[in-house]
Structure formats: C-alpha cells, structure tokens
Image 1 (cartoon, each protein chain N blue to C red):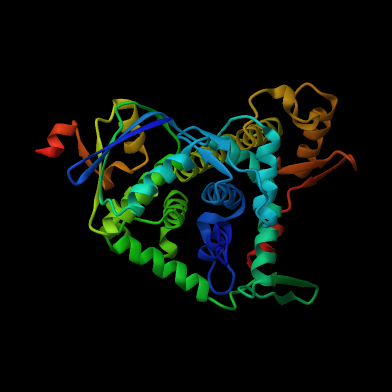
Image 2: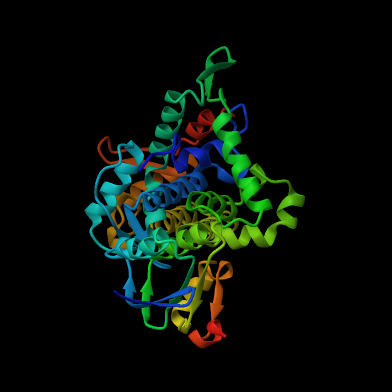
Length: 294
Length: 108
C-alpha cells in the first residue's frame, strides 16, 4: 500500500495551526494529546493494523509500518494482547502526548512542511516557533474536505477519518466558516459518525473537560485541590482502582502526605513527581506554550 | 463466515452467514471483488444471517458501493436484523445504501 506523504496525525496537526504555528484554542494541551492519540489509532485502522467495533479495538496485521509514531502505538497494542475499549486506548495513549507532539513536529520539519524559527522575547528568553513553510499539503487536505462536504459523493475512508476528528474535536472552524458548518451540518454529522474511533473522541474530550471544569469550580483547600488533581489523572488515564496509583498520589501512603505538603507549599496541585530523583515539580505548561509559539 | 451467491436477472443475490470481523474481512472483500471484476453491477446483500460486523467489514461495504455507483450500479442491503441495522445506523453507513425488507420487494 502506498503511504500518503503525511500521516493522519500530521494532517490534523497542520489543520490545527495557523501560518505562524500557533495552535487552535480547542486543541491545546491535554485536548491535543487525546485527539492525536485517536488520530494515531484511526491511521492504524486505515492501514489494517487494528480493527474495531462500537466498543473495542482489536489487533489486525502485526507488520511494522516504518513510521515511528504508528509503530510505537502498534507495539503497545500488540503487547497489551487483549481487547480494550476505544475510549480507554485514547486516554491511555495520551500519556505520550508530549512525545507525539515532538515527533509530529520533527517529522513535519524533516518533510519541509514546517520550519524552525527562534524568536527572542526578552533579552534572556527565546522561544521556538514552527511556522508553515509549504502549505501545499495543507491546502490539498482543506480543499479535498471542503469538496467532499459540499458534494454528495460517497466519502473515502481517509476523508471520513479527517472529518470525524475535526467534528468531534470542535475543529471544523479550521476549514469551514460558521455559515458553512450550519448549512452543511447534516452532511458533516453523517460523515463524522462513520468512524467509531472518531465518535469516541467526542466522548473522551467531553468527559475530560467536564472533570477539569468540576475541579476548577469545586477546589478550595490543598487537600481538595490534590484530590481533584488525582481524580483528573485517574479519569485521564482511566484508572479505576486506587491501588494502581503511584504512591505519591495514593491516599494513605507516606508519600501522599509529602505530596500534600508540597501542594501547600506551592499553592497548586498541578504538580508532578519524579520517583527516580524523589523530587516534586510544578507541571511545565511552558512546554506547550513554546511549542505553539505563544 | 459463509457466503452464498446466486445470479437472478441483473442481480447477484449474496447471503452472508456468520460474522465479518478482523479474521475474515479480506476474504469477504475478495469475494465481492470477483463480482465487480466480472462486470456485475447490481448486488443484493442479504444480511438476515449476519451476526456481527466490525469496522473493517463496514468499510468494505462502502468500498463496494462506491465502486458500483461509479459504474451506475448499486448495492441493496436486504433483510437486516435489528442488531445489524443498529450498527449500520450508529456508524452512519445506513444512509448511503438502498434498503429492502425482503428479496421479493426488490425484484418487483
């Protein structure tokens, strides 16, 4: 089978940024991790490496593809060697979000679709941007999807995947105007639901964003902040049994008390723990900001 | 999965028995491709005995429909059970196909 020049996650990444490399509001941070995880699964399905029904993902062919990201995910699925719900795979894989993002950008730079630009913000601080250098591929995808939606053709499986991701991630605005979305809503919805993994993205994002919203509304004390953060992590990584949590976020352990102490000290529960160095730190959202050139 | 086919006028009646899943969707695809390669344009797929279908199976239905519509042919889905109909409905595939409750209604 001939591979497209860009894989599905790369196409989605390109559709989600402007010409300066700034990312669409709806696809930042954890949302991006979840959507890209789903995009990888959908690409594997198109390449007959996995199959699914409305609920589960199954392995299909086991041959490597020759793509770092896709092969990495395929290895994990093969190694798991069991059926797992689509939503759970999306959430589980999103733990590698930062790696996915790095690899997508690296690959797009290598393919001369993006370029690296260093910009000095203050005299002591420079940020890296990845603006689009050649938008031929992007324009091709945009025009293909627009023609599909405005027409009555039976869609190709690759285009179904793109429409499904854009619809379920609230990213239709990257291709269509509001008027177009409203006018062609029935056609968009019809095509968007033609992929079960695509359908699952909407559920995962909804669940995840509700959990964040809840935690913002309800959090008050450091104890509550930490509990909310743990709940968020549990939801994101679909941990149902507290015993599977690492000790630093498992209530009742000595390490959890240390975590609580750190939360009190820094005033936020958006923290992480390095078990090797036995060191806490605040989550570095600056990574995302520099990656998106904000 | 078992596939039983017979030619009736311009139609090929194809009855699918069992499951179309990861283990056999390629066989299913190849079987249908034979009819397309022979120049048959109208397929009636009797799904009354289809027990399960995965995404890969659904994609073959779409691929065949696309190929036949391109040559002014068609695929008619017939005799869908509630279970299979709901899969086609949930996946949005149903709206692309012509449906029939029974074989006789097509031939009339």
